[in-house]
Image 1: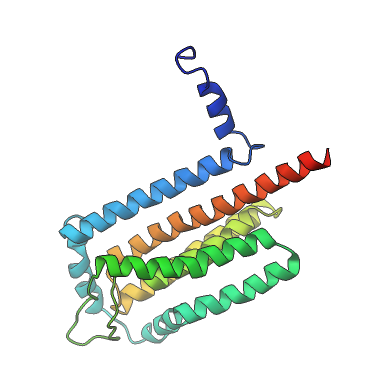
Image 2 (image 1 turned 180 degrees about the vertical axis):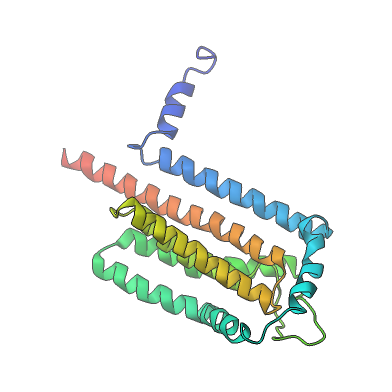
Length: 240
């Protein structure tokens, strides 16, 4: 094996090296991106064929709509309006300003790529699938835009996912990192549920948006991380 592929050991060592700009972090990022893209493909296939998860969408939407509670509706409306594109972009702008003041230029670049860039990607995907919104006799909200994948859920995944990545890559104690990741996951789940609760999306819409968000975040963070590490290695070599 080694004689047949003499460069294979070096290739594998490079792919799993922490020191190389295109090593372990790039390998992990590509793996996450491929896994998330594969999950998105499975969900999209079920949705298009109305099998598996896609077959559950309409019955689940009707079941939940029949059990709406007036006590929860204002809160769900607040969550969903807070996380509309303008709201997420406003939060991203505030975080971006903080990154800039702290000199976190690579995280600022990752934020710019992941949130506004991800929202544009989501719109493009919506126009590829052109799925109609759920339909009810007495809808809570009425929307004319396409349904798959959920833009609100994707936006929340881009934004809160990036914040979780910043926390994980920081020097905070592991418990603080775990709390940040749990908080980000809870916010994304809350936004996703609000969209289903209000009848704006099917279950497959929000799950596909979550997969889309993870894939896009992996691309953006991995690319920026590789750029940062390459520049650091280049600066170190120039200083020697």
